[in-house]
Structures are given as structure tokens and as C-alpha cells.
Length: 151
Image (cartoon, rainbow, N blue to C red; front, side, top):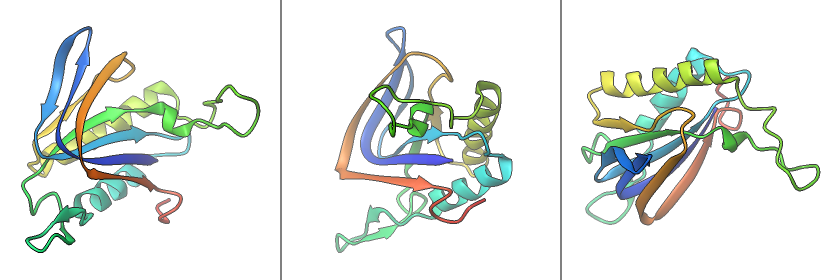
């Protein structure tokens, strides 16, 4: 599983010209699900996401988590995080999870964040979405379950 995380001042997502999700200060998280991901991996990724200290404290140091700053989440499904560009010029997406499993895990992630009482907005799985953001920093990181030892 991969999360592309952007610290934002504000962000929104629109489908067919209508805004379906919008947040203020918080994290825009693009979620990529692989063919081997499951709920246990999603649980650990969400736990790590909530604990990341990527917000500035009073001294300008990144020492605060999203809970510390009462931040919000905008969660967007993004199968293209599993693009394989090793051969040729057209990306392959065979490493991405099948839509039914990916959607189930995407919904699971949203539910976990809501259960923790975070304001959590989201896109529409599989839709053509237009995402707008004001990146704060800019501050963008990739959280990859394989790279941080979550299996």
C-alpha cells in the first residue's frame, strides 16, 4: 500500500463539476492499493499516518501530528501510484489491486479515520476526479508499506 501525503492549507475534490469533498488545514492523502494488500496492512498504514509528526510546532520544527493540530483528511483513491514504468513508455498497472478489493480497503481507511474522530472527506472511487489543493510547505511524502516494513 502506498500513501502519497501532502500537507495542505486547503484541498477539495470535484466530480462532474461538483465538489464532493473539501477540507481546510490537514492532509490530502492519495491511496494506492496493491494486489497483495489487506485490512491488516491498511490498519498499520493508517496508524502510521495518524502518528506522523509533519506539522510545525511553535518553533517551526515538524514535531506535531495531525491530531495535535486538529487537522482534517481528504482521502483520494489513486491506483496510478502502482504504475510500473520500467519497460517502454506506457505505464503498466498490473501491480495495482483489483478494483473490488481496492475499493473495500479504501472505504476501510476512510472508516478508520472517521472512527478516530477526524474530519475525513473523500473522493469517489474510480471516478474522474479533479483535485485542488494549496500545498503547505510544500510538504509531500510517500509512505510505502513495503519500505517501512508493514506486511
